[in-house]
Length: 85
Image (cartoon, rainbow, N blue to C red; front, side, top):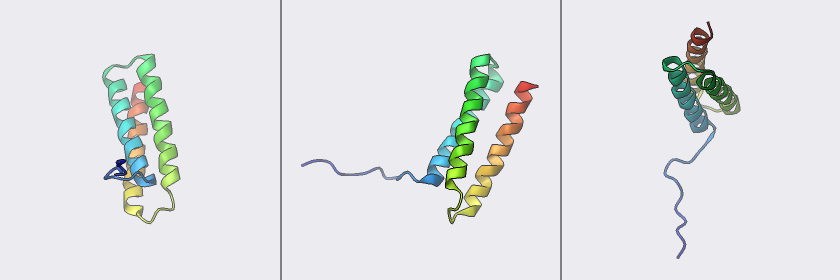
């Protein structure tokens, strides 16, 4: 009998956005502690992906979560700007 169980946490635009923002946070933290051209570029790319994921989640009924994600993105932009000077 095939195993048809699905993930307990189904992916949706909100969870995708949260995961992307978390990944951007980790990438930017790495770039802040080890600022090399490669880690900075990875941080920029992760932040761009997170922005797109949050945009994709717009229109979701959970505006409180979206507001927090947008605040987190803003904070990550500030942190990345500190690295860039």
